[in-house]
Length: 194
Image (tube, rainbow, N blue to C red):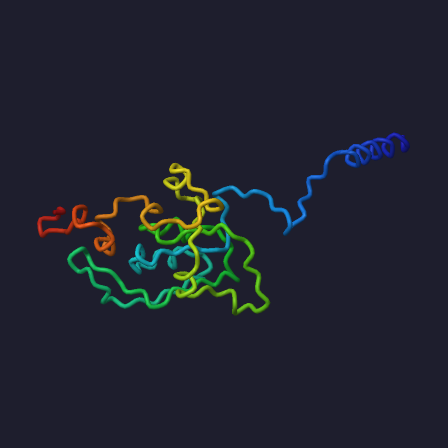
């Protein structure tokens, strides 16, 4: 029967006509985002990065460019690279997060923003200087320690360097200078710390 289908359609239309709308008038109003949202504001902690380029190796699109100098210091703790260039081309990024998963020192995090639109494609490349200078709002995606501590990138103004990592600080080659003398550990020739 043709009339019954049309009547059912009108019933659905009338139900939606009288219910409260679910539309949000962006940008005046905003929906709340989950803390695990994988956004465009990549967060990079330079002091945690050793220049190992694991993030660039695991990126399926090859959008991360890293140029390092092997004379980064900290030879006693295993050595480190000095990172000269760390660029991310977010115009080609699919925000899969494999670079974040690959980082062994939690130096790279997904961001929490999504408003990085630009008029020129070349402006979508995030340089090392921009990554250093921007406010840190790391997403809790693939970072259970942040979620466990109740961190919310939308409420907390800045993700602290010492709160974002998974592992203990004393075995990271670049971190001894960030600790007070009482907590500072140095590697010995026996393979332990003192």
